[in-house]
Image: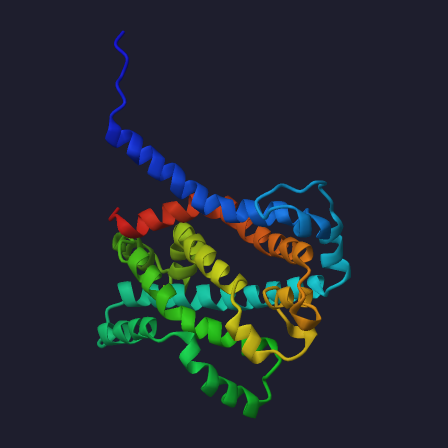
Length: 279
C-alpha cells in the first residue's frame, strides 16, 4: 500500500488549528490550575507553572469568606425571571409575525429589529432615573426587566426564522379539527420548536449569567448582588487581591455555564440548523 503523502498546506492548516485551540483552551486551563495555588505559589512560581501542591483552601474560602451562596441564589432567580417570560413572549411574537397574516406585521417586525441597534448601556441612566422614582432600585425587577426588554429583539428574530418554515398544513388541519390558535401554539408549536427554544435559552442564559453592568447599576446591597459582582469580594484594601480565591470564584462562576452548554449543545446545533435550512 502506498503511504498517503501529507501536503504542506495540510500541515499549515493543522498547525493553525492547533494554535487556535491552545489560544482558546489555555485561559481556562490557567484559571482552573491557579485556583489550586497557594499564596506562596503566586509569589514564587512563574505564572504558567502548575501548583506545587494542589489545595482546596481557595474553594473553601470562596464559600466561607464571601456571600457566594447568596450570589448564586440571586443569579438563579434573575436567570429564571429573564428566561421564562422572554422565551414565552419571543416565541409567541415570532410565531405570530411569521404565520398570522395581518396588516402591518412587517412594520412590527422591523420595529423589533430596530432594537438590535440599541445597546443596553445607552439606556442605563434613563432607566436608573425611572427605577429610582418608582422605588425599584435594589430589587429583582430592576435587574430582570431591562434584560428582557433588550433581549426581545434578538430572540424574536431567531424564533421568526425558525417558525417561518413551520408546516402551515399542520396548523390548518388542527384548526379545521376545532383547535383554537392558542391551543395550536401550546400543543403543536411549542413541542415542535423545542430545539429552537433550547437554542435561544442557551444563548440568552449565558448572556444573563455573565451580565455585569446592569446588575452593578441597579443593586446597592450585598443581598442583591449577582455572582459576577461577587468577584469583587476578593479585592481587599489598597487593591490587594486574593488571587487564589479569585480564580476559584471564577471557576465556580463559569462551571454552571459549561455544564449547561455541554448538555444543551446538541439540541442547540439542531435548532440552529432548523432555523437555517428549510424543511
